[in-house]
Length: 296
Image (cartoon, rainbow, N blue to C red; front, side, top):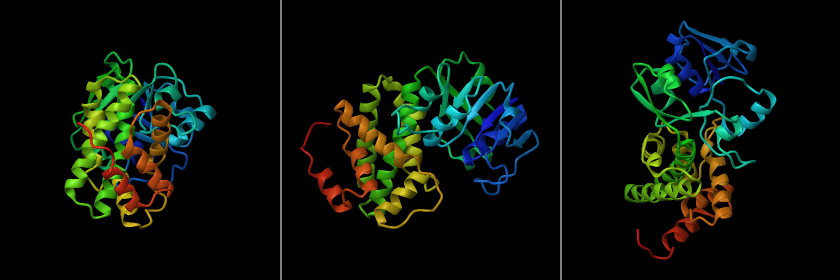
């Protein structure tokens, strides 16, 4: 049996994809659904009782990043824990595996919940000390997992691409054009690699599914909440109420990390300033376009 903690869109999608293994899906509110049109199949048991997860072969923890630390402090889950959230905790500036503790894994990569739930081909990265056991358990005919021991790189790829996706949305929302988006995404990827290297990640991890792959997906599809949030920001419009945008909090965390370590991350830091409302968009564009000229 596989346990899934959190019945938001991604948690439900994973439960559907892994139903043949037998899944217990825990929801704070079992009656709510954030994945419209998706019915839980036989093999998935929905519950509001965390005790029902005891004995699970793996625990997929699909909670919002900023809620993870508080939940784990209140409910210290036992077993093979796999974080299925993307971001950096604002309070500690840590990624999800540091919060979950020794032996934890992270599942990340280019994926939309709706695609996974529909059984469309999806490839993800499983990062952690797995010897292949978890990789085999969580792979299906439509869900293919690649594994790595570089949890730092996998986590940062999944977290930082959300910030760049917001910036890409701002570019399009403000009417700056596709050429500007291409440049923004490319220079944003350079920032991702810069911070990841400084924090001990392997360069090849950022070039893989959890970095470049996820960046390509979220910067180019309206299924991305972060891209849609950026579009609204660029247009000066309110965003969809009640929708979690992980990249918004991550932008603030990244700006703080970059400042602490003296790392240049002008795009990510500007996203944080735009969200906070401390820099107007025209000024943000001017500041980025008039930075000192340099070699690529």
